[in-house]
Every structure is written in C-alpha cells, then in structure tokens.
Length: 98
Image 1: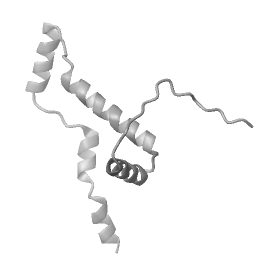
Image 2 (image 1 turned 90 degrees about the horizontal axis):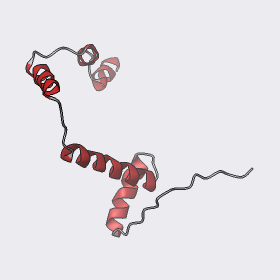
Image 3 (image 1 turned 90 degrees about the vertical axis):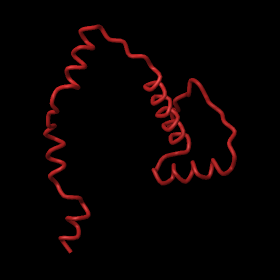
C-alpha cells in the first residue's frame, strides 16, 4: 500500500547555530512534536502577535462609541471563570487525599 504524502507548497530553509538547534530540539521533544512542527508553530504564533500589534483597527463612530461604552461599564462575571476560581488547586486536593 503506497503511502500518500502531502506536498508542501512553500518550503522554508534556515541555517542555525548548533546551540539554537539543540534548544529547539529539546523543547520540541518535551512538547512531543517534531522540530518542523515546533518551529512552524512558534514562527506562526510570533507572526500573528506582530500582526495583531501592528495592524490598524478601524471602526465606525457608532462602533467606537459602543466599544467605549462596553469597556467603561461595570464588569460582568463570566460563570465559567467564577466556577473555576471556586475550585481548589489540583495539588491541594492531592495533598488532602494522602
């Protein structure tokens, strides 16, 4: 049975010092991923962060007024967060069982 391999559309090649490869390989191994997956995910995450930081957000006057009203008003509890904060830490419950 022939193995189907998905062809990558745009290969990316990099030259890195051995120390950089070692730390990347260690982190990838600890996270259970390949070097390629680890580096791809890290690069995409950083690219998204830069784009979010540098991208101009435009709003209508009405949309901006609604945004200001939402952040100026009183906060509202998020039920899921309230429930989670009421639970003890996992290490606390483990200690009580011993």
